[in-house]
Image (cartoon, rainbow, N blue to C red; front, side, top):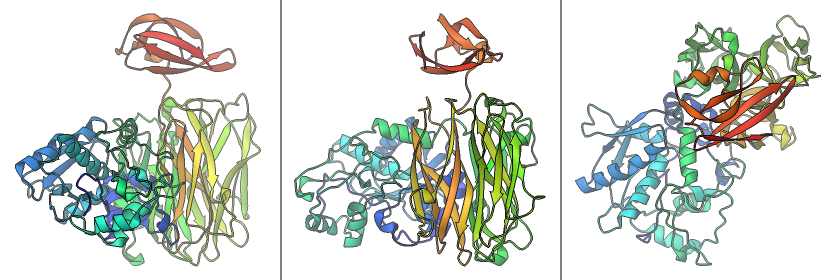
Length: 605
């Protein structure tokens, strides 16, 4: 049996293939962002056609109250869970409520204490799916009174990390351990785990692919790192039994469960409908959405398609938009028309508003242009001081499906005054119409980044591959972690198979993120490309000095709307760092203000 002091768990303890599509739909209904966040793929998953469940994130909706119920256990065991599991909620915008009347308050997480079944948890929203069927989603076999409190705390924190969607830290590709496999098979083959070899292999000997893992370095202090005895490796090495959340654990959970609403939003049709047959497919899906800020018009909202699923030889007629719009709310709309049945589709959008006055954007409609290639010269309403960054995202598409689906939108000939935007099909593909969103911003801005990646960045187009992942590094690090908007700009898929494609991210940091372009099922992806926009939020300006959250301190330079530098005697004390983008004449520059005991220290860059 496994040594009593080892921490081994299996967060897909039961059949991971069971009810896959249902669990994906459950995760998207719970949190639409799961459609645009990827989970790591294991090495053995990468060699066969991907299932959608393998690449879908399982995060709960931020701000959610998770109701936790118990299937068994003594009062003392239950008290240990209540005492320690809630430590995660100090850093995540989520609440745990422990319920006893499970008939009146159906639990999202069902905890069992079956000593014969080992310690394990399902991952994130899968807990809710199985709990809704009366099945345990967490089992805590080793919560026994003869163990030290520190170890009980560590085990509970570890399993509830899985409940919140976290995977094991030491399954990253850098974790190359010289395993004594025979010893591990013997230990874990007996009670309480009683695992067969395939379960042991999946839990300990499979690692995540380098470019699909959430984060690139192992955190040796993470509570999500497994602990194992020295007899399990040939060099008799052992890991430290981590007893508490590391700083990385806290950073991770803060990012995925933020305290404030995101500027970037998502909508996936699987939140509403999961059609079993093409004949039952809806043509129009809508979701009401409140905005984070007051919007004067819908043109201030940038939209992009980040998920498509159509049957073979289907004419792609797809539109993603924000409709029925007023200042505080609107309706996210995904629709198809005519004979174009859709399995599922997804979009994300970003609210520009007054927060980003330096950004220019618009929509190129190529309906009235003829031929395979459709292009137009765009003139900026206000010229930039130098050629800006420009990206394009697909907003709607009408593409023939008799031949392969091939489409590309791109900006070229970029100058300070304008650029040429192109929408084209090639070879024997036929493009009827497309709406392409374009976004332009100064290349030297420190609070926004943009760019694009494509599957052909890492492989030739004639070698199709379903999983394509990239590490994106921002030109300049952000002061705070930005939200990332993704939208396709290129498709090249075999129309004899399904068109299943999605664009997603994993672990966004202040310096970059991992971008994923993935297909699933029988889809054959020759080419696919996405554009990204990473805005970091609103810069503080002179209009903010009347806010009540400040106290007098030493003089600091501040920017006002007309660009003139002004000296004031007040600064925010609830912020550690301010980034002021300022102008003197025609010259823009950044000032970074580090507030230490209300005394600003000013550094220019």
